[in-house]
Amino acid sequence: MTGAAAEPGGVRSAASRRGPLAMEASSLSKEFRLGRGQVVHAARDVSFNLYRGAVVALVGESGSGKSTVAKMLAGQERLTAGTIRLDGQPVDLSSLRAFRRYKGSVQMVFQDPFASLNPVHTVRHHLERPIRLHQGRKSKAELRAGVNALLEQVRLIPAEQFAEKYPHELSGGQRQRVSFARALAAQPSVLLADEPVSMLDVSIRLEMLSLLDDLRNRLHLALLYITHDIASARYFADEVLVMYAGEIVERGPAEQVTQQPAHPYTQLLVASAPDPDNLGSTLRSGFQASAGRGVAVAEQGCPFSPRCPFADDQCRAEDPAPQPVSADRAASCWHLDVAAAAAVATAGESEV
Image (cartoon, rainbow, N blue to C red):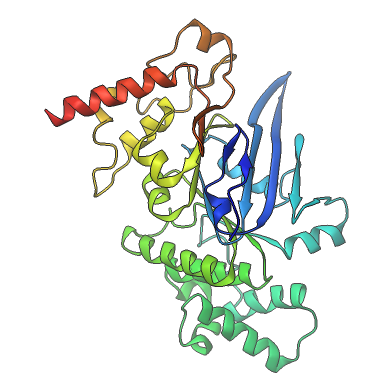
């Protein structure tokens, strides 16, 4: 167990209390050029750390840049700017050998369990291949034992039976378990989970999150959980990073961020969250007007200003730097006091 480490914005990291630092993402930026001088800033100056045994949730609407950040960390997108460190060492993926070595430590699980597996191969084939790639030469008996162990880790039992199945013979949840097992075959220290339950039936989402939680505890994984569902982040993550238009606009302990959101955008996400405990019910009425407009982005100033009920000339002219909310929370907003007062006032109205 370690002490809390400093994060961007000068705050402590709640996730750092779980274990040692595994990965550092510093000032990551990604630009996509569309021609005729048009540039899309998919990620801008994104910084955060991942720690062994901890879950950091990256939360935001579709189009906010979450998956782009994950792909940069996974080595699937080149960085426009910024640096990534793994176990304290700068990541250099300039050669195939370096990329393969990196993938042995950093694995990604994708959103769509139906597209991530090759339909012409059995589950055994999907798991034997990464074992050979990342664990060296194995005898047939060792391969079989390795496949069975992976399937048992993700609770696909009896393992021998599932190993011989084809993807079309599995349910969506079972396919995603195979995807988890394939990622674990590399024996990674960092797992990037990009919307891993969003395409599954609601009835099994909690079961899958429970499996992920068990794996990160048992294997001491550093886990980045990417989701648009801030309610699930509340129950699953140690720390929440809220992303809008390519920027992290709020960060802090999951319970605090979801129960007392500081940034107006986080308040909007919480107010829109369908949650059995009525998460965000005290904020919902204040954000009816701005909900559902999509990720509108200002050309300058605060990226959320076109949708923010508190935006003024300063917001439209200058993009705010992260401001400390407490010792382990920060938010990028010029009017955190106004947003907090509005939330309290709305809460009072709801109680009447």
